[in-house]
Image 1: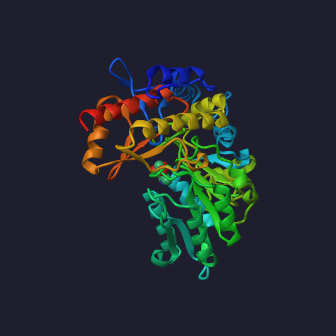
Image 2: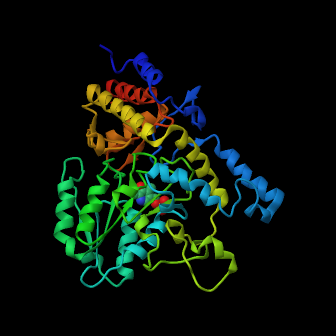
Image 3: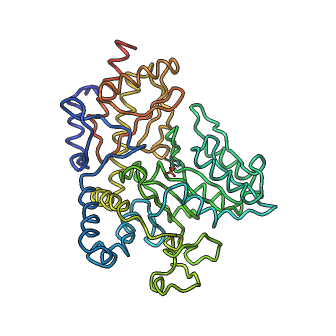
Length: 425
Ligand SMILES: *Cc1c(COP(=O)(O)O)cnc(C)c1O
C-alpha cells in the first residue's frame, strides 16, 4: 500500500497524470532555490508567460501604426473582443454570441440588473445567499434602493443550514418557493467564495423561472474552475472576473453572459456606442441599434492593453480543455482531501462539501483551536513557501489550480501542516 504522504507517491501521481501540468507556461513566484506552492489562484491567478508577448504586440502596434492599429493585422483593435469570444464561450459552456469580455464584475452585475431586475410593487424582491461577497450585496441593495424599494423587506437572504456554513439545495428551494410571487431576481454564486461550495445552477435557474423570477449567477469563483454549462443552465445572465482562475492579471477585464433567448430583447439597458451594431456604428447616427447578443451590452471601446492577457490566458485553456482541467482539478483536490483526512484531521476541518458536484478546486479548511492558532499555522505555511489565503476568523482556503499546481504542491502543503502539528502547533 502506498503512503499518501510519501514524496515519491506525489511525484508518481504527477508523472502518471493524464493531463501533464502546464506549470512551465506560468511565472511561479520563487521561494528559496525553488518555487512557492501557490494555492491562491482563487484570488489572483499566476501570470502566463505568453501574456508579455500579447501585451507587447499591442504596444508595438500602437507605436508603429497608431490609429491604423484599429484595422491592421490579425489582432486589429476594432474587433479585438472577438479574439477572446470563442475561447471564453468554451470555458463557460456558452454559445459565442452569449458572452462578452468587458468592464469589471461589479459593473457588469449592475448593467445586467438594469436589464434583468425590473421590480414592480407586487414583485420587488431579490433573493441572494446570506454572507454573499460584499460587492454583490452592495450592488443588489443599491439597485433595490435605486428603484425606490426597501432592502429590509425586499432583499431575501438564504441562511446556511448545514454545519460548516454551506447551504442545502432544499433550503434554496424552500426560500425560492416561499418568496416566489415576490421575487424579481434570484442571484446566486456558482462556487461560494468562503466555503468553496458549488451549486447546481440549472436547478436554481429552473426554480427561479418556475416562480416567474429572472435568474443570474456570479461566477467569480467558477469561471475557469468548474465545467460550466451556462447556455444549458438556462440562466438569464451571468457575470465573472478574469483575475482569479482565469489568470488574466490584477483587475483584468471581466466576463458577462446573456442567454441567447435575450439576444434581441427590448428590455431596457444602459447603452453605449460599442453596443451598437458593428456595421453601422461609425455612421454615428442618433438611434441606438443594439448588436444582437451579449455584445449589445458593451458601452465603450474596450481597453485593448487590458484585454491582451485574457487572450493569452484563453490560449492555455484551449490547449488543456476545460473538461480535462476539471477532471485534473478533482484529482488534485481529492488528493488534498485524502491527505487532510488521513493525518491532519485534528488540525483542519474541511468545510467544503465532499460530493464531486459540490465543490471546485478550493477546499476551505477551518483551523481547530481558534483564530490565534489559525494565524500561527497560516504564517508558518507562508514562511515555508506554501501560500493559501486567510478568511476571518479561522479559515484557510487552499485552491490547487489544475493549470499549474501539482500533486507535489499539494503534498508540500500537507507535510508543512504536519510538521507544524508535530512541532510549533
Ligand atoms: C472576486 C469577487 C468579486 C470581485 O468583484 P470586482 O468587481 O471584480 O472587484 C465579486 N464577487 C465575488 C463573488 C467575488 O468572488
